Image (tube, rainbow, N blue to C red; front, side):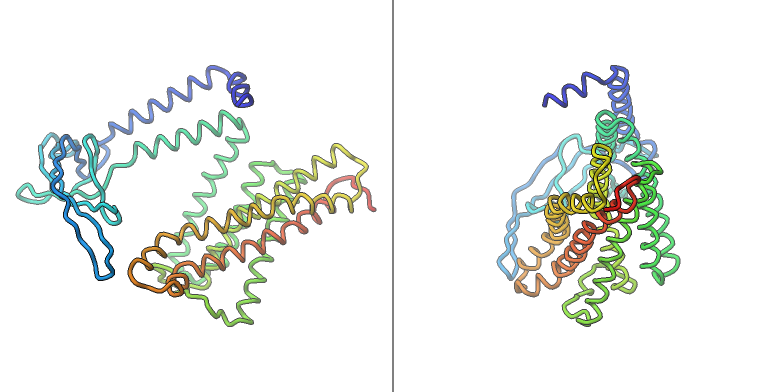
Length: 369
């Protein structure tokens, strides 16, 4: 807490006031931007909830449904100012629908004879608030490093969007090559913006690419010998192209960040160690890198495991609640997540000796012994 207070005290008051003013303008403007939308926006002014009605299925899963009468006004377009009453039905679980409250704004479909259907929330205000908060915290606490990180996110987002369009236009024929190339570009741009063009940046880039490449090559070798037994690609939803290259591309992009993070930590620590102890030998640099990697490798593997498995948990529970066995639910929902975790774990483990080796070779002025 003291360090946070010290950072805030050192900040120029103009930066703090500017961030607050920009945030207020962005949030206020977004909350009054209905005129920018072509689809009618409905503001809820009063709500009347009916009685709860219990429903259950053949597997004895119980839920409750409630009918709502929403009274409000259209806020934009030709029908601006028109008062409507819209019926909405929501469930207690909220799996496929949602409850609306007074002051909520939502998109609607307006039909003839005054009949309307409510579609979804208008979410731009909370999104703008979260974007403003994230940018403000990056700039306030990290200064230029935060700006560089933000810039790398923006650039990489545009590159990823362009790659998705290219993949769509080529019908996914070169998806693995496309996203493999994108991974290299991601790494180079991110490290260049964060570290600058330096020996440390090039060393980290080599380690990141090598560690990620090792994980993919090892996984392909294992797939060849096991004939991909137990790989349920059909569980990948809405896939309209070859699932295996798409799965590998997804895994490659997903594990790239962890490998880059680990390589950056190890190599930056070794460069700092070299600046403090110029007489340290290459062998000592390599051994120090292994020690650093051993301390951060475990948490990174667990983080990726939780991310991959956490994303599949809701659907797995839905399978179980609908009478499927534990084995089938695991195979159809979690098996690919386990494989992704293992492939990413291979990259994380491989990055430790690779980062240590590249650092021992590329750190300028290191002793030969």
